[in-house]
Length: 224
Image (cartoon, rainbow, N blue to C red; front, top):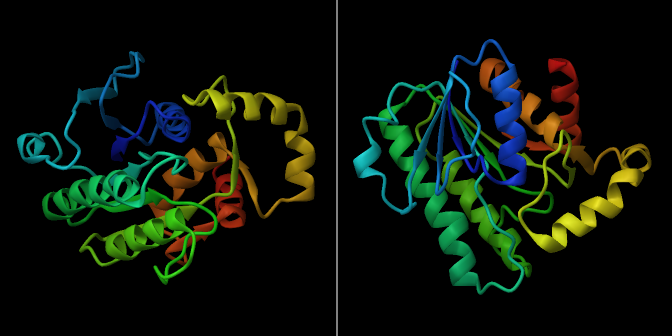
């Protein structure tokens, strides 16, 4: 399986990258990001790209892939709705529309979030924008598209968030993770489970298009 990965330098994307590198059935990984990950492996190829609203100059590089794992995203904290929508909706749809045209047999998997508002009418800004993004992706002519909606995500395997506040939160929460997972299994997952679940869904599909934390954990457990 040949995979395109967006957001490999972020916390979730880094976890997905690690699982792709470890999986012998993933034969090639193309990472598209503003900077390289620094990881050197034979099946990983990285492209530094700055304008995520335009991919015309990369079309040859983006052709011939089986799956896309779209993990690029930002926190909405302190952002206006237009600014957040530009990164969340515009970047995602620019990439997805290009890939759907170049790779119609591709499976596209998007990392959304618990609480996403598919009605696009709720009072929470980020949830409306994520819902609009999901709805648009599900209309594109991919072989299949799946929306991953994780809740709390614990980074594992030495992965850290790029945001200082989140790093502090995860450092405090790390010793509590087993208890959080026990008490709130429907809302707690980790970077490893997300990566494993993405790979299995790309290979085999899933019975529904929107996958919550419990679905991600169940599928990730099947992959182990």
